[in-house]
Length: 345
Image (cartoon, rainbow, N blue to C red; front, side, top):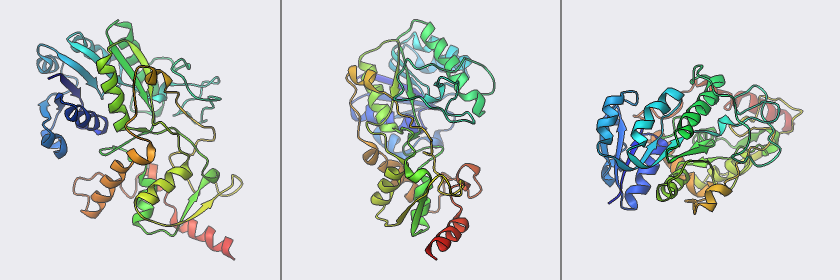
């Protein structure tokens, strides 16, 4: 029975990967600081929790022990993190480091976290230019991408069989920032209409945690040092996503597609990019990767998880707070009602 160790395995990507590997007959250990965070479905499926702090090099070496067939690092954010990963990777048949599409820059140096949105001029291949590596605060918008680049460099310069995966707007059960909440909350609030900026054409390629898991299983069978984009097989627009959510939750609403010459604060969603951001995943497909499903199929896990949390009173505190600044701008119901009333007159 092959063995996998997932660092930070209780989060969204870790839990999807653990479930896929367990179903395929793997023995799976997941690390974390609190066993209470182990998702019940992982425990039921046979995953073993190993208490370990990601930054505790000695403890991590103890957890790896005599080695593992697959090592997955879901919480590698900096060059320092990557350096701690290398001794563990030397004891592993194949290693996966989760990076991000936030590393990419367009010809003007704009990226996904810059004030000016990037324009890549077409699908983004792994050869696209990236930010310069840096060690400024990785928790800041300016520091997240540069730190991921620095971590990638450490991993790939080692010569070890480490696959660096670059996903985009990851979705799935266990999401720290469940972006589909922008539409799920509207359904739960029984809103009769959904307003969409840019006529709903905004496109930022999503990535299901289940599809990352499928790619991880693929590279586990074919170890190597490489960079691979990871994204859903389709790249839905904001309008497509709103329809997928409403359809799955059995809700009907009126679609109000806003032009750019109106109130720019209305109809905001997480997919409002003025230029499409689509990842080219052909390199992964050439390795034999086959996605678990398209967006509408795979997003169901996140939608059901959110609705169940709301139905049961959100005892685990997974739903975004009412004053969350990221989501607050998406629920301007008063301004929406004023706009709709004016345009019905």
